[in-house]
Length: 41
Image (cartoon, rainbow, N blue to C red; front, top):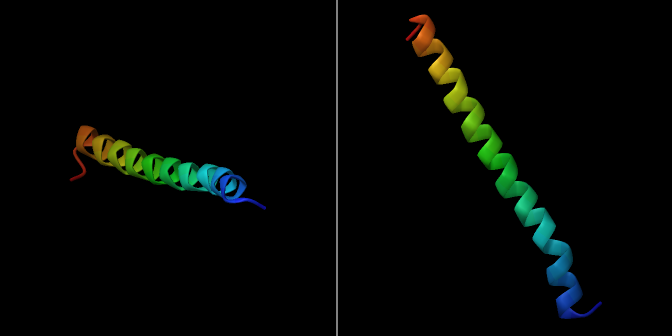
């Protein structure tokens, strides 16, 4: 495998990790907003 092929294979994994991090952050923000709206803070 050449260097370009290895980089191409690694890029989706890096993007996937970043997307998972963003989903986790948004889920936490959503939970906090729900608790605040319910008065449970």
